Length: 222
Image (cartoon, rainbow, N blue to C red; front, side):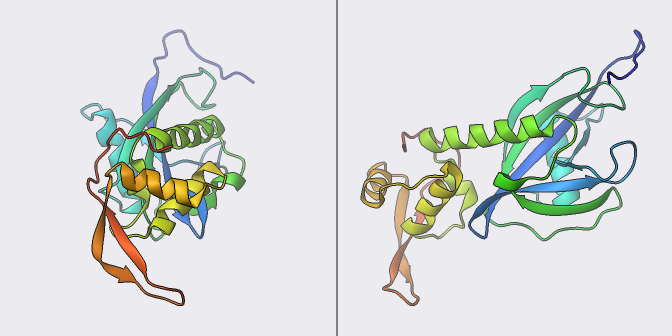
């Protein structure tokens, strides 16, 4: 049912943030459970209204920081969602962002939401508003950027093995990659530098690597 509106009503601007990480071998997203209003009990990405004196990206970083404690993350504007009926309570245009972190931060209890949790992207619960569209677009953007940028650095610790790096690609793309070709391509691009230490475990030691730059760069990876 369409929301009743007045011809004098103006739209508010909000931000929503899709926070993604690799958790237990799964690409996972951070969701919050709404606490009040007609949508209480529904799951959504964290977000909120933009303040009058606040740039959009600052608003997205503030919402992320308040809900997760994260301050230094990869953040990119995704798309603007403005369907008149996307919010049943008022006319809201949302600018969506996606953020990437190498490890899932501990969940924080806040008064604003009833709950918060990490969910595998392949098995998200039913999302309210138009957040199913936002989720699909975030995944599509991330998969595309893996092919032509070094964005994988934002999902890895500073030191990692080539196996760790390949696992990030395979987890997000949902398919296996040829080990030899993948490693030859990554090393040939000059994006990585070997470290003077190895990871030791049950199997033979594995060389550790780091990205030469932990900033966005264009590179034909796939």
